[in-house]
Amino acid sequence: MWDTVIGIETHVQLATSSKIFSTGGTKFGNSPNSQIDYVDVGLPGVLPVLNAKAVELAVKFGIAVGGQIANESIFARKNYFYPDLPKGYQISQFEKPIVVGGSLEIKSFDSSVFNVPLVRAHLEEDAGKSVHDGVENFFPGFSGIDLNRAGMPLLEIVTEPTLTSAQEAVAYGRTLHNLVTWIEICDGNMQEGSFRMDANVSIKPRGAKKLGVRCEIKNLNSFRYLEKAIRYEVARQIDIIESGGMVTQQTRLFDPVKNETREMRSKENSDDYRYFPDPDLPPLIIESDYIEQVGSTLPELPDHARSRLSKKWSLPDDLVMSICSKKQNLIFFEESLKYWFRLTSLKFNFDNPDEILIRRSKILANWLTGELFSILNKENIDICESKISPKKLSEVLIKLEDNTLSKKTAKQLFSLIWNGEKGDINKIIIDKNLNKIEDDSAVEDLIGEVISKNQKMVNEFRSGKEKALNALVGQVMKKSGGRAEAKDVKEKILLLIG
Image (cartoon, rainbow, N blue to C red; front, side, top):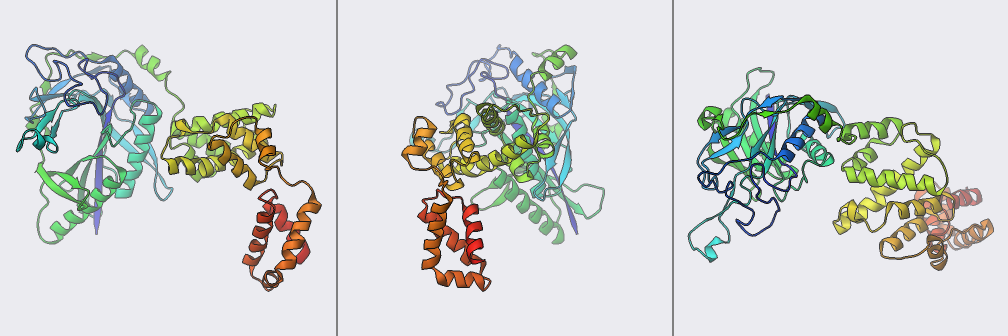
């Protein structure tokens, strides 16, 4: 009965060492008002100077999304009064942004692929922060102003209102987050405010062309909050209209405790901000040569990497999405694969993979997304902090490939190295008695022993209970200390009792 219409505005804090118009610092977590200079506090007579690095990073993003980089863009003053806005205006871009258009290809929750067109991306400065908690210990009944964020370099990225559900909005948010961290224009730390989303939500009768009245939900700093806020807001607007009321254009906040949105203020239009060109900043002129120079620094983009691993390397989609969720994951994956080939003196060509590369990449991808990612998540660390290097992981997989290790003992070796076992990998295998049992007769003796003591399980398998076979395999593996290969054990048991 109702269509949902969503547009997303994302504030991406650019990875610069100083602010966009001043020499103030950009480190997070410093004591209040310790990362500021005269421009940030709006002292009379000071002049802003544009940070060249912020321009470079904005251009980098524009190229990555296929947008048009403006040869001339203008900075404007966006006028409004807030206690944490010392100048009484925010320097932003209005009529002539640095990036126009572009799009992002999104793989949705249901594996469908769709494009999200972008309206623009423009440079601006952040405001400060009003602090209400903790100040009462020093000044009861008062709030404080922390201007450390004032002047932080932001790239505001605006979509067309084409998203139709909370799930699509989250898929877009994750894809954008992946891109800006991949090309290293933002650290992506949502808890620190480096990546904040505003969702413009409206509803309209199904199939209607005219858009409904929109409400903007501000400062969503997690994908979970983004989804919950949109779901609540859609239900709220539907309830208002179906009850005979009218939706009022508002700016709203999401309350993560009550899981609801609440009114912050009536929604302003651009006229309310009285935009005009900032007289202290000249037009930003960007030459074609500069755009080409910045474009040459871009790495392989995530959508291309996903396509390469999926189509050329024949990796399953779920593994590809996990590996390409962060650029560092892909780097670790490919470094491990390179070591695997070098240590076995085989040639490799990532652009034209042969059967060996495809086979090894699948084995490695499963280990990476299984064993490694599992322990990284458990210890809550990034892959850059991995306690097992790409070289060591490749050495483990070499021993698995040449049948020195079974799958179980390979995992045991992985765990030993992760927990600090040092030295030559062959010595570790011998010292810890991990090498695979090569003597078929020894494995067959273990199988015979297990079968003789578990005739009930044998009879259950023969009567059609498949689980009984797995139980027999498990007992043999236990007796072997994991040094037998489960697949071989299963085949031998089937020959004896099948």
